[in-house]
Length: 468
Image (cartoon, one colour):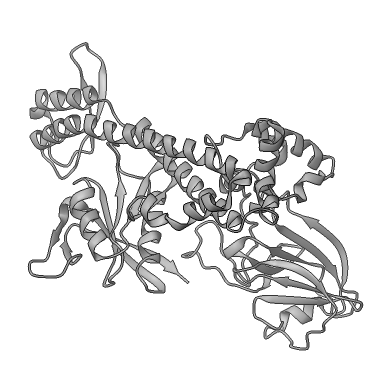
């Protein structure tokens, strides 16, 4: 091991290097010999002189499994080596084959770092979850309109960025629907055959080398913008779909006022009979009494139209820009050098003003993080609604993070709240286990006389996130 995350297996005629460093995980053959013994003797004890009896891939995912046996009097039974080439979570794990108990690993993963599984010597090995749908189910995939490479990577098992780009280029070149290209590719893969076009680069990229300077840079820039806009379009459409109708909020408010004598402060929900004799379940805020809950519903009813108009306008603007980008990308191969230079030379004049970072979490929940003190101030006291969630790493001068309700009456799942806490921790400038305070925006106040971004808050709940 020339590095704590790189394990080299000496087969005599060549070396097989397993590199689990997060920046560039992968495997390679080499003739160079590595003389540095692993610090943990378990690697050599179980692998030195062993025979490889099997090699397999876990589905279509980037997980290689090597099986070993040693025929010595000190043999402790067969073992398996799991090489997980999964980006920043890449790892090399040696397990006892009889019971799948971990013997050694290149990187330990605690239960605080990963709720799904723990990686540490002595515990039982749990494989990583599938990265998406297997090829035989690719026809079931739900993709956004105008998907980018990362949309395919997130949904389809075993698909990486280069393959995703090849799939999109194939669909563009043949005029086929992306689902049709995926169906044909899945059939080839299940026959253990890889079509020739998988290794090809997208058409516009091939033209880069023979056409005007700057073509590659412009294509990459517009593709990145298109991908980001597609993500924002999906989030906005999800938020619009989740908006309750104003009539629903007004009905809830009127029912709460009608039955206010039967309701008490501290109730989370109530089942009330409407004017037609139907049982209606009404979500309540425990901290509010019945009249305050009713007033809250009436405020939401008044704000639904504004929020709906804002979301619909945003969706139309994004769709218009996507159409413009598609047209520009299609024309790049034939675009004259002067026009390419013009488009590359005016990014600051043609793009929108810089905005806070926006993330889309599970279930369509939107999370926004400020980049500096001015954005933190704007985000907390102008952009956010009173009932949105506000998160900040305790004791750090990092981002204010807002988890938007977007009209939802209920609270987010714990998993979504933890994801938002992870974002706040990552933008705190600190490492290790970071405490993140979470409260509602209405409990956050400016500090009189303090610089922008300094606040005080109450009614907080503390979550913990790990930043490596």
